[in-house]
Length: 370
Image 1 (cartoon, rainbow, N blue to C red):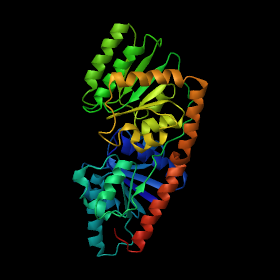
Image 2 (tube, rainbow, N blue to C red):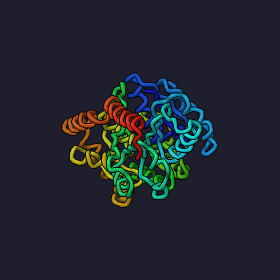
Image 3 (spheres, rainbow, N blue to C red):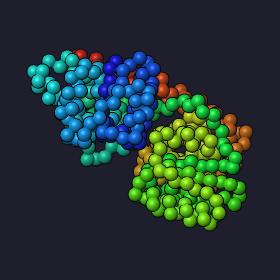
């Protein structure tokens, strides 16, 4: 298949992480993958794996360029959010008018919803025009199914995770890695993590924390980190900004603090996780693994999880440093890794995407509309 992904931009985030890993799996299966979006830090990583990148201006100024791209005999055009989806609808409708209804050579349109579905986009044209819709979160699936005219077979797709070749194992002294947007809503969790490290560092000699992320709260995080470093007389907390590949730091971590792809990638390599984002989920273990995945590790069901505070994080950190450092804890991590591999490997998710794409192609060929 010849597949064109369309996004708003190529900044670091859930949509571009999905794109990168989906492309890896699809390319390995012999498909051709291209992407159209505004520029961003993930462009180089996509090009490095063989994805052709078409840079677009912001919406709606991108639409004429999209119209030209969609004339290139793609089998699938896959929008990775409703904004990109509406841009595609505009381009496809214009092509349809030019072709006077002879749409044989137009691509089949697939839409994916990343994260929670905001109420203001539930009437977007792309939700009606897409031949197949997929999402990664149970909460988004539930919202889609409540839309009166929505078909019930919206697909819940596992997030794809790449198996890395780097050697994994906690460094000594122990080190935590936190990956999060440092926004107004998520920044307080980073401040809480710094305070939690302060509370327990005297019992875990040399304990340190690195916080990756950008946002409006980063200055506050940097200031709090610097205060603690001066107080302790060592570099206990660092906040170097965003990164396109946090795993380079995660592979030697005693634990990773985060949600979504970050949490999945850590567990996929038997690295302990404290799931915390907008709200807190807690230490992920065998008993709650399925629940953690379903709620996107604390980001999926707003208002149902506890607030991320230092008082909440401290026992989570203590449990990580005691339970998962032992033989039974390491065995538990390995069992979770095996469970996740079955559904979240690049090849498994690429196979699911192939099936969805073929359904869309068949529906278009047969004149089926949503």
